[in-house]
Amino acid sequence: MKEFHKIVSVHPLILYSDDLLDFEKILRTSLSLKQQDLELRISQEHTDINGNSFSELLAQSLSKQIDTLSIHAYGRPNGIEITKSISFTFYYNYVDYQIRGDDETWFLGMILQLDRFFAKRKPWYSFLNRSEPVWIAGLIVISLYVARALVSLILKQDFILFFSMLVPFLLGVTIPILAFKQVIFPYVRIYTYIKGEAKINYELLNLIVAIGALLVSVAGIVISVLFR
Image (tube, rainbow, N blue to C red; front, side, top):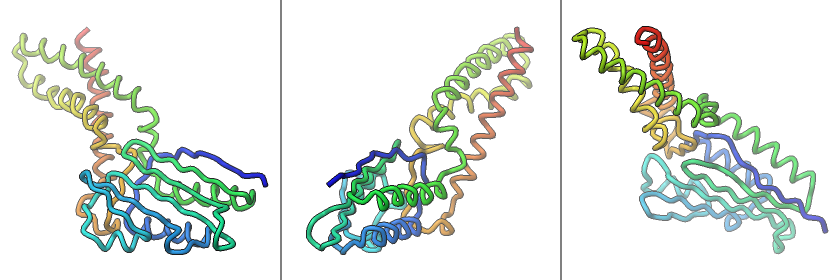
């Protein structure tokens, strides 16, 4: 019997507890899962927590943010033999899944259903993740221009302009470091609470940082013109 198999890479994601519960419903419905046919593992602070449902895991004392999540789901139409399976890996800088099955209609339909689910959880800044090496390199170059201008301003004792340029310089240095460490513009974020319960709107925070990066770029262009 022919088997269909595919490894799928997923774009950046932000998931909350209610998303995880909805995700489980999709898997259980599509694979007709029994309780033991869904294996979940959460890794946080060098500790692995296993379970067979997200409601079970979320009821435990978890940190507000999960570092790593793995999911294995097995479909047994006849109750014995595994004919369908999906395995997911959510890590801090990538997401992918492997899907197998002997039913092409189910196989293609499942991929489409997952694509739609993940598309609704894609953060607005996902285009920045794809082009991260380019814009980080750009910010570093601009920061070097600003640094040179700051030295020139100190020598000229123009302290008003110096302090006005100091903020763009600090942003240009700090933003690449925070992005590299996944503090801002994270590829994957999994929160163990409902989105509306968040005390800090992280997507808004990332938007503010993005605007800061734009201001750095503008400042760098202005400085490169004024201090040639």
